Length: 103
Image (cartoon, rainbow, N blue to C red; front, side, top):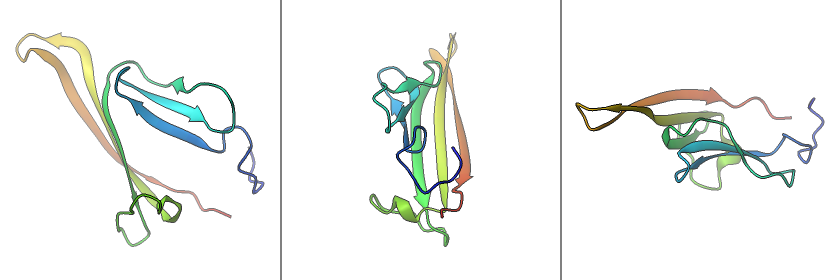
């Protein structure tokens, strides 16, 4: 949707979450009645978002509206079983996402 200062349109207020039971990441459009949609294969063992302000200070819960960038950590585990270690191999992705300018 093009910017229109309305946040009640579909796909303008979404929640990305970790489903520990399903080992997946889900996407939930808060402006629709639809159930959360599974976005990954069942290989995710952790998801962490840390919000930061423009000075690089971590934000507390409730201060997310001040975020200028977000550190995202996703941990996944291979579905292939490693007999040497007795489990699937674990990998972690760390990245930063810049928050686009708000009107």
